[in-house]
Image (cartoon, rainbow, N blue to C red; front, side):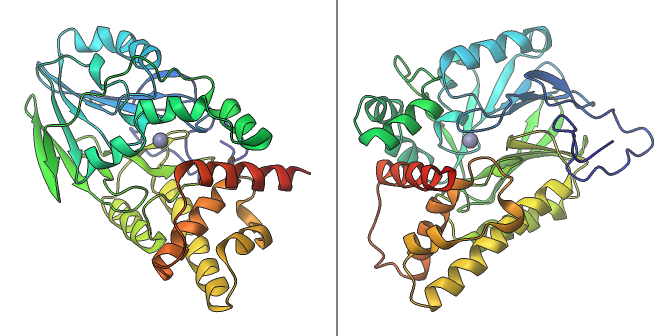
Amino acid sequence: MSTTDPHHLYASGRARSEGEPMSTTYDRGLHDLGDGVSAWLLPDGSWGWSNAGLVRGDGESLLFDTLFDLPLTREMLDAMAPLTETAPIRHLVNSHANGDHCFGNELVPAEATVYAGTDFTHHLHEASPAVLQSMMESDYGPVGTAYLQRWFGPFTFTGISVREPEVTVDTSLTVDVGGRDVELLMLGPAHTASDLVAWVPDAGVLFAGDLLFLGGAPIVWAGPAAAWIDACDRMIALDPRHVVPGHGPVTDTDGIREVRSYLEFVRDYAAETFQAGMGWREAADRIDLASFDSLDNSERIIANLYTEYRHLDPETPQQGLPELIVGMAEWDAARSR
Ligand SMILES: [Zn+2]
């Protein structure tokens, strides 16, 4: 086991304990985590390439998240069909309202109950399929447009009608999935306003949604970073054996600690530059990402510092989604030169 192997399951390279299933590779498709729990992984984990999961009970299943478009979601549901034939999906959990975790909802059987955290619908409408499609058709200048096409071009945002959740989880909810408990814990606002995770205690598996990005920089849409750090602590306290992040390979608590340390870095750097009277944009231009610059999409530091500054000073002028994307594109282009 080597920490430099990109297909290696665990960030830490720790030894596998007795009786623990073998490490899963980071390949596209369904991965058995043992105890009737599976992860669906979509490398490379960059923008839109997200993970999902399936928990099977007696005669029914819970699906954790759908994917960014209908073809991706259909591919996943087809691959799960041998498992869901005898245990149909009766529960669908949306970790949060970003499209790469819910745009495929309409393909899940209508009998399934859909669960999400507080404020899900509001945030869904801010970045609905129609909003994303119109961004793809807009001109944001050569750098911004090229960035959008590069990262979001592979997905299809037309013809999607997102089925909205009917059960809102404000703090926590235990769902009986064919005789086994799945605990839904609302740990946001952090990544977004409504970050819901699913903890499967009898299997020791945690589906973390976008409270975890492995291999790529986390992006703080809601924040502050301190709240997300608290969410990391709550996930670590569950002491999971396997942790399925929203993006990246399956990990364990060491993967949670890696994300936590990035967020600490953002929190401390923003506090320092804010105190020094520096604007967030200049702070982003000057930042030395040090040990974190090997993460993909390091340009997300733009959104992360902006969000942190909005918490430090609510008078910080607001940026829309397109402005933030263009800002990330420009930061990335400047760093690549
Ligand atoms: Zn995501």
